[in-house]
Picture (tube, rainbow, N blue to C red):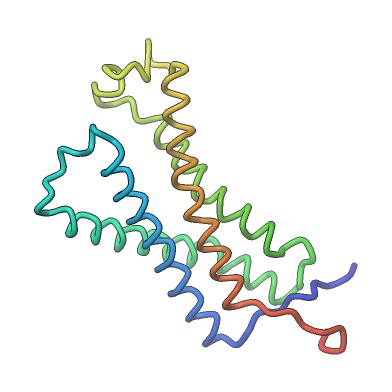
Length: 169
């Protein structure tokens, strides 16, 4: 089996890539939250005096979640890649993995959050099951969170991974 032509850079550069990728994901989450606050009339109730603090908190929360995901789920993949140089793990599959790591939990959480009466009131649930509107809401939530994983994966790939010539294999 052939080895990948990609190779991780030095551990210092990989550590920097962890921080920068998580920061990029957090910033994107903060921007998504801001855009949602501007466009969605239901969220306009947020006090504009505290909007900056709220968005800064969302950015920090997003970055923290990205770091936890990187350390717990991506690091074992990187150790495997470093040792076996899997040819299937490249920028495209990394972005797909990033999207899935963002979208699937969001889909599961949104589709299972019927404990409060609000979901029933909005028509997302009927008799304990998701309605079409509920599935649309769950999928749109997943599609909002999934790109955060893609951004983290792409930023990490650009910083921490390099192509190596055939002579370095």
